[in-house]
Amino acid sequence: MRIALVTTYPPGKGSLNEYAYHFVRALRAKPEVSEVVLLADELPAGEVYSDEPATDGVAALRIVPCWRFDGIGNPLGIVQTVRREKPDAVFFNIQFATFGGSKIPATLGLLTPLLLKLSGYRTVVLLHNIMETVDLQSAGYAGNRLVEWLMRAIGAVVTWLVLQADLVALTIPKYVEILRAKYRAENVLLAPHGSFDDEMEEPSFDLPDGPKQIMAFGKFGTYKKVEEMIEAVQLLIQRGSEPLEVVVAGTDSPNAAGYLAGVEEHYAHLDNLRFTGYVAEEDVPRIFQEAAVAVFPYTSTTGSSGVLHQAGDYGKAVVLPKIGDFAEVISEEGYTGEFFTPGDVESLADAIERILANSDYRKEMGMRNFHASRGLPIADVVDWYLIHLEGLPSR
Amino acid sequence: MNVKPSVLADGSIGLLALEGRFDAYEESQVRSWLDAEQAAGRSHLIIDLSGVNFIDSTALAALVRGMKLTREAEGDLLLCALRQPVRVIFELTRLDRVFPIFSDVDEAARHFDRSTATA
Image (tube, rainbow over all chains, first blue to last red; front, side):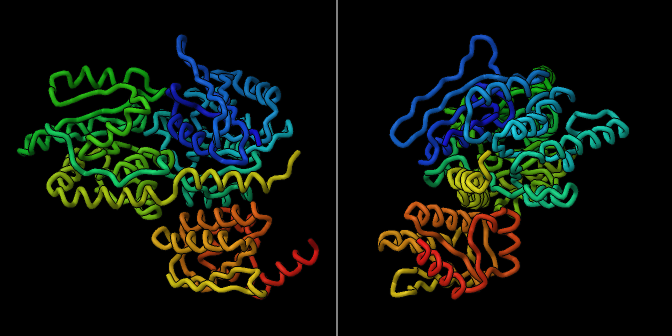
């Protein structure tokens, strides 16, 4: 079976690139898959994707850049590429802003599953968020209530279009229930997010010498903002805590170019603040392992958090915002953490402090999160997709 | 979780009856049974879920793996007697459309009889 996957992919830096990396790794290892063709976004000048030949038990990987973030020709480019490649099925690894930060390119890109289905291809969409649960104002997509209402109306239409795919998989049960109830969508299903490392040894809870690192990982500037975390750590130092270092690991969100540079300039006077910039895949383990606490400085959520699963993979204690989605992830997937109220620096400082104050508690939380993350390797999740795919009629 | 393995139809069908919570902490028992059945050359398998009151994604993954293994060996893994909380999870994941599900063990066993007769 030849599978095409529309996605971002490393070294591309678009959202969901890390999920795609691990999903593809698992997909290529399945005996029923003979080739994976990635329909990825175009890279900046000077960067190239690397194709990988088939090896023993691992399918070939070919990467065809055929769309770009904020491009209005993306549906055409993807459809033409699929027609040329003639895969047995097309998967999408997307969220609502995958194809653009502006409304028109983002919406046009989300028409692609429908266009491919109409062209006779089996289409399966892994949708990482839904419009119904996105706080548009906090996410930076709307300036006032009228615009927000209008965006939700447009979002409903776009959601309906995405639901025209053969199958739409979501990672949170509530999302499935919402789409089934609101759109009467029978083709929506729950598929677990999955953990990224299939064979992982029990993590070490030892920390490096030097200041304890309070780390946030991701793409920042829209609904992930680091100012409160920085302020909270400074508050802890004022309270007389042991030496601490704030580590901001990642880059600007594509929708918030320049955000981190502004933060760095604003806090230039602090000597315990470090910005790593883009974290290459091979550096991800070290970044997590060195952190004493992983903080999720989110003002809203737009889906199940890949970062939370990574934190679990590395046995990290986590500090999470009191926002519905995260509470659900905690309760349904077995994670645990300390919670803070978004917008309340003192609350965030208290949450971090509760973990730092008790090393046994930090390790126990890390171990519980590790077991939660080990629940279902992404290789098993891929099996679910392939089994569902087999149930779809060939066209 | 209690696990009761047995065989039906002169040893050609493997049956596993489960009772209790079927989750990440318990699924290894089912995986071990699947491996043992595969080693014994049995690819017609039934899992009786009538005693299961909770199932999580890891347990579902174990069942999916079992289904793949049996189908690769030209057999199948049938499920039977799903209680309502378990059926809800199967519906949420659409795995109710993937697994053959029967009301009880006898009906599942008859399905194997019919498919063997028509093969």
